[in-house]
Image (cartoon, rainbow, N blue to C red; front, side):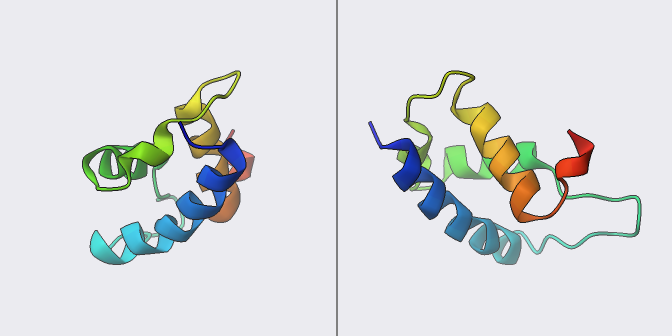
Length: 77
């Protein structure tokens, strides 16, 4: 089990790794990066243990909100 605060720091670093590895680029003004794509990538990666932290709403919910905040897409929630 990982501490939530430690997971957040490491996961935020992985956002850019994911973006580079998957060559993710917005396709236009109405196209947004999807947290679910990142979460699926994270599950399959060697970093999947970072999803093992306690959170009232669940780890995936937290990661989705961190993702949207990081990429300035929070208005979508």
